[in-house]
Image 1 (cartoon, rainbow, N blue to C red):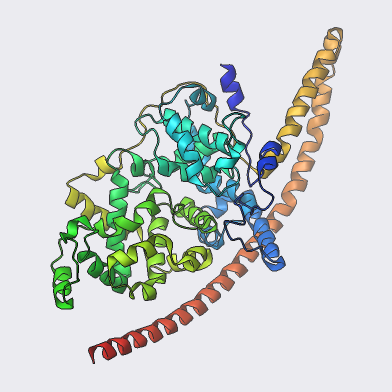
Image 2 (image 1 turned 90 degrees about the vertical axis):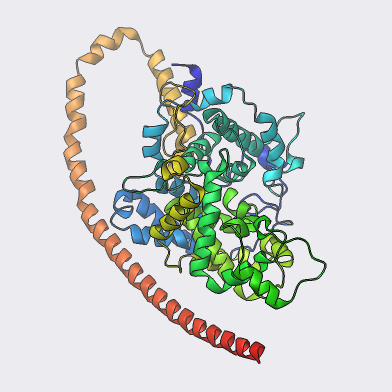
Length: 533
């Protein structure tokens, strides 16, 4: 076993924005909880009520961690409800780790991978990775150009990001590196060490379908490999779902796209003056647009960067919560929700050339309202069957088989050796790492200082000591198990009350939404009548 492998098992994990003293010294004083400069990224300071709400949610999540097997199977509905409300930032790293079932993935897929050995292997992508570090989140204190000095060495954030991306590029040489990966890795680095970030990133890139499923839960690797098969498929599926779930918004987008030279398959040349409306309608009716081409011009970066490129970080972190919990389907939900929420102003645009900049960067109040975006995203009755049907249409149109499209897992890892992936990161592990290491050192010193002559004398009372140690075990076990049943009943009662309360709120919100929808429909009919008149 190599010394590198020994070091890999002791890589420290940082959950939450807790940089090293050197890194924090380089940071400007005014940064938000994620490390972004407040003068560039507007951050509303949470009030006391919000702080108390988050503390309550932390306690609920910690209770779920203690009984994770039950919550992740028998009480999955409550678990997902809490994910959609937003995972508390303090325990977000541990929640992601459990939601992605990383421990099982490590035992099956990363048995022969040694993180430190990956770092020791040169990569042809390192130069490009270094260039992209400052382009990923330039407004972040640890990743901005001013925080990285080539003479004194990279900042803590830059080093972690470089190590994470380098390790994956070496682990998966057929993919290597793509700039979109840097956004995801940089986000993971804010909650994990470079080692743990690499492990979770590899989990998100895994393209192996789970049991009884035809699609992988995440499968992000297909977004970045040659020909971008999953990106093409995702854009095709998104446009198909847009046509099903946002019919009026889709109709307007399609009308503009069919008359726009921006869309390659439209066949429209640049025109000095738009033709009459009747001509434009005829074009839209007989449009040769390929499914997926219309949304590609604005949604390409949404899927490549999991929305990090185009939405505020505080919103993207909520999207990532849902993605890790629910898989790729969550990305389609969010994309549909955004188009629906901008539906009214969207219809005011008369050309795709005017609309495109707005789709890329405007509508900031909607982009920044994570609660509204996630709530709208899960108002759609979207199932796996909808996604699978759209994918089947994509495969048929492209002449590709599902197996070839999704079988994009890493076949042979470049290294073999003993398992050296770190244990599951928890807040207790982080706080106790230094203490445990110091205890181990003290214990080793004590053993070395003990006289060897007394070894035989110590052997004699071993049985007696063993009996003394085991004697109170049964009593302790009974004391520990006694309140378990009572605690379980209290938790079940609490969950039941919360579920009933949530269902009641959902019913009230649905009623309000139905009323609003009816009013909107009446307004639309009035507007149509006015325009016809």
